[in-house]
Amino acid sequence: MKLKNILLTTLIMASTAVWAEPSHRVFVTNEKDNTVSVIDTKTNEVTNTINIGERPRGIGLSPDQKLLYVAISEEGAIAVVDLDTLKVVKKLDAGEDPETFDVAPNGNIYISNEDDAQASVIDPKTGKIIEVIPVGLEPEGVAVSPDGSLALVTSESTNMVHVIDTAKHKVVKNILVAARPRGLAFNSDGSLAYSTSEVGNEVTIIDTKSLSIIKQASIDLPNSKPMDIAVSPDDKTIYVTTGRGNSVVVLDAKTLEMKANVPVGKRVWGLGMTRDGSRLYTADGVSSTVSVVDTATNKTIKTIEVGKFPWGVVVDD
Amino acid sequence: MSKLKKLGLIVLFIWPQIIFANPINVTLHYIGPTDGQVWAGVQQGLSEANLQGQFLGQNYQVKNITEEELAALPQSEITAVLVGTDAKHILEIAKMKKLAYVPVFNLSSDADGLRQACLSNLLNIPLSKQMKTDALAQWQAKNPDTLVTAHAWHHDFVKFAASQLNNRFTKNHKTQMDDDAWAGWAAVKMLSDTVARTQKTDAADMLNYLKNDLSFDGQKGDTATFRETGQLRQIVLLIDKDDNIVAEAPLRGVKGGLDSLGMVTCKK
Image (tube, rainbow over all chains, first blue to last red; front, side, top):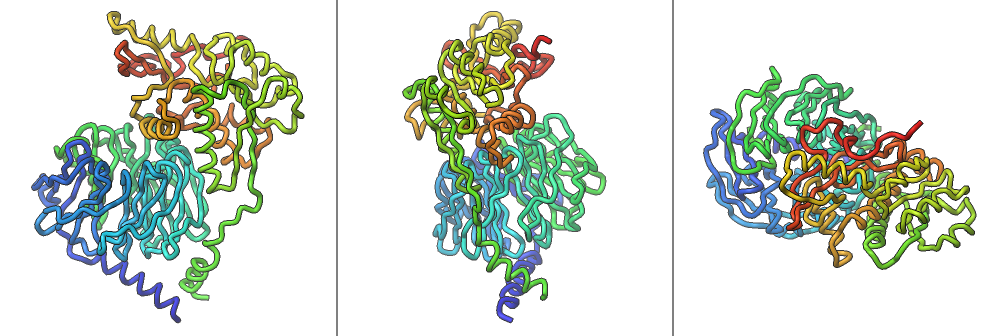
């Protein structure tokens, strides 16, 4: 059965990416000093600092984990870093004001263009923008489903999660969520997606089959401004950074009940997790640090000085 | 049917079809000048409302009318009234009998009397005089030597995504967003937010939602809500004589948060 084969191939391709040998490093964009800090996860020390370009924000890895992609917003580009040499090897045109992105299993980059109310799809092999998809105002978070069939984009000022069918590159559903939606994440099989609403102080669970909201809950903490999300490998727990709440909240992935609140640095946005789910790395913007959280004890075990205003985190471990 | 096949079928046939069975058309009425900042703000809000509406199946228009024309309009044709004139006229309009359950927005007056009137249908977007006075007092208690003025908005405001709003306003209107423009923008934007979330355009339903359930992102910090006086809760920007933003009120450490600014409750 053809359809089945295509889907299976996609699934297998998606899963092979996960098995590439990790380099045991964390990469952090420093928005205000135009660098990426490289952290060795064995020592949790900064080993390198890469001069990346103006106003680095979103960050991600190619499916084979050989390349690092960094959105350099002021240059309208994505810087491509060779992870063997830690050198910028090229810059891809990414449209106006690229902010965050996700890399699909087939390698395409889905990126939000904040000032242009659109999402762009870049083929990094050719360096071409292959599609531009109009979305709501101030598009922000992007996540591609594990099988690559869906891309979600939040629009902060129109309060929506836009669902894009990646086969057609068309918006197929617009889901209204609480005010100023930001971060997005899928669970491991892609059956659920999570979104955060920064101003509404909510987390939303979206069923990706019916494309409807199945749960919404606010975070019961003063000053909480939920941002980035990570889902544990067993899909039982989600971790959400709270911005000016200066913490990572640990929520039950089904009920959204708060299980713990882990203090980290100030104005925490970006969040990355090791593949085994044992460690979290947070970008504490105002503190200019990365906090390392042990998820077994829900405690910050180390605070690492990085560049100015760390924004995004990606973990290759 | 196998799960995969089902998924495939859903991808192929169901997802691509977004059909707006019943698009919602909303007409808002505006009374006031059509050459100033309030009107530019209303237009900005309108374009953003329609951008959102394009995805959700809603169309918005703003009709500029006179007070006399409003008086002649059948109640069934009025969803919300935006007023950018002076306090006297705003109060007159808000007190029109047929508008008792219609949201009437004050977009331009800081008169405390409009808040003290405690009309259940009057929603005041601008800062009241009292809010400004209280914000200035908070500042002067700590900084007696620097004179500042109190504003709802500033073209250099960056935080809370204010810069994005400033950018798109300037791009569209070739002028900078100020208090008046922000008020016009905010009113239309919160109305469209209400329609998007309630899927209703009945004036009384709108008013009820705006006063009780609204959680509005005015791109200046925490969600904005209305007091029982009809005043929008919001931060106040303090600007020095060189046109720099020096602080946001409520100032840190002041008790009462946003409600430390202006009159909060109605006299019983």
